[in-house]
Image (cartoon, rainbow, N blue to C red; front, side):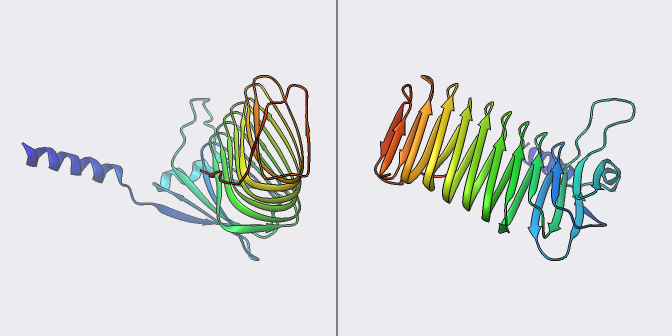
Length: 255
């Protein structure tokens, strides 16, 4: 009986473990990437543009769309012509670009980078259960907006950071910024190891904020939200309803 069970289990594994196939596609220089429909994008910076698609069957390639429109690369699953439910096939797309500064990801898709990205500025919009994961060094401004259960995670070193989290979304952040502006509504900002010289924070609708500040912090919140700050800023300002807690060090762990 044990031998029979082991044999059956091994058979199930072999059925589930399908070989991956890769298709190279034409790549053009773009400055914006949009990803949707559960597709995972692995993004790399390099001088020469490249684009490839990986999935578990040759028949899936026709449904995985990589579309260039002007300066934008759109990556998504093709909608059935008969209006039936969209079936999302396992898909990973490898994108290499030099000058992308705008990312938009939604529909439970993922954009991730394994290398530190260097940009003059960047705008990142994450929605509908999607995720963006990367470490970045930004010369100018970095804007991150997350909503609808989406998430952003990474280390950012920048001159100016603007974070906006709403609707069950989260930002998990480490790094540094000269100035930062944070807004949370029914969301969380976990940035105890994100140290800002100057930061403004507003939290409402049961939001939780952790932030680092070493010179100035202005915090405001409604009665259902809380702000925890780390460091010893020389100047602090708190709104009449703000619940802010000071921590003496930066022993916050970024998960």
